[in-house]
Image (tube, rainbow, N blue to C red; front, side, top):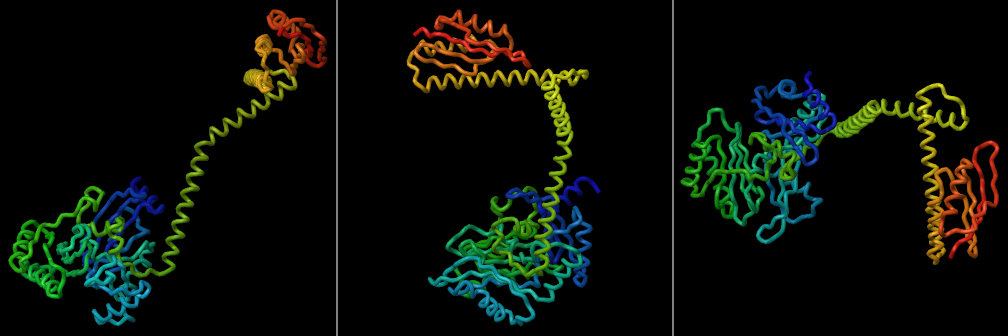
Length: 489
C-alpha cells in the first residue's frame, strides 16, 4: 500500500474525499477531494454493465478493481432508464399539498400502483400558465424492488451512503441556454443514451430519455428527435427558436443539424457548455452529470430516494468518530513534538529555582553549572530591583506633578536627587515642607551613602545637607539613613 493510497483513505475517513458511483447502462466512478469551495477531481473510470442480474456483485467488483482506495463512504447515483422521470406543471396549490398531487399525477400518467413504487420530486420554480401562477415540478418514479436492490448493494458492500439520488437530467444542465422568452431545445448523445429536453426561461419543462441500441441507425434517431419536438409544438408549447445538440462526433452533429432543419424547419447548432459550469480541469463531459452533485446548479435537478434511517445515523456517527480521532491524533502528535522542549524548560526551571534557594541561604556552590545559574539569578534580581526603583522614582515624579508643583526649582531638586542617587542606594521616602526636606532610604554599603551625600553637596538646588540618622543592620550590610536638607527656591 503506497503513501498516496494511505492519504486517500485518511481523506475519506475525514469526509473530505467523496466517491460518486453511478449505476446506469454502465458503471461510472468519480472521486473528488472537497475542502469547502475548493474541489479537485482525482480519478474517473467507467465500464459497461454486463450482468444486470448480478448488480450487487458487479458494483462490488467495480469498486475493488477501479477505485483508488477501499471505498466505505459513497454517493450512490442512478441514471438508469428504468427510473421514470417527468416534469409536471401544476397549478397554484399550497406547497404542503404538492406531494399528494404529484403522486396522483404520476399514477395517472404512468398507470402505476402506488403500493409498488416510490416517488421522489423537487420543486424547481414558480411558473405561469396563461397568466396564472403555478409550480414547475420534477418527479421521478422507481420500483420498490429496485430501490431495495440498491439498499442491498449498500448493505452487502458495507458502505456508508451520503445519498441515493436520480441524476438522469443532470447531463443536460451544462448546456442549458440563458433565460429567454422563447423556447429552445437540447439534444445530448452519450455512450449508451440520448437525452432530449425543452427549455423555457432557462428551465427544463419537457424531457425524454432513450437508450441507444447497439446497432445504431441515424435516420431512426433523427425521426425520434423530430417526433419529440413536433409533439411539443402540437401541444401548444412556446415558439421553438432553435435546438442545441451535441452528438458523438462532428460528422453526426452535421448530419443531425441538416436533418432537423429539413424535417421540422428549426435551426440546430452545436451545443457548448458555458465556462461557469466547471472549475475543475481536465474533466470529461462523460462525468459532468456526476460532478453536478458538487455544484449549486444541480441541486434542484437531483431526485432523492429514501435511505434507511440507520444508515444516516451511521454516517453521522462515523463523521463524529473520525474527526474526534483526528483531533486526538493532532493533540498527541503536538505533545510528542513539544515534549523535548517542555522537558528542557522544566529542567532549566528546576535549576533556577535551586539557584534562588542557594542565593537566599548563602550556601557554598561546588558545581560549576549551578554556580553559573546562581550568578544569572543574582544579576536578574539586581536588574529587577533597579527596575522597581526606577518605577518608584517615576511614581514619585508623577505624584509630584499631580500636586501641581509650580516651582521649577523644586522640580529640578527632585531631578537632581534622582541623578545623584548611586546604583546601590535607594530612597524609601522624600518629603518637602516650607523649603525644607527629608530623605529616608537605604544604602548597600557605607561607601554608597558617602557617594550619595557627596553628590547632594554638589547640587546647586540643595543646601544645609545634614545626615540626621545612620543605622547599620547587624545581619546584613545595608545602611539605613535619614538626611535633612533645605531647598533653594
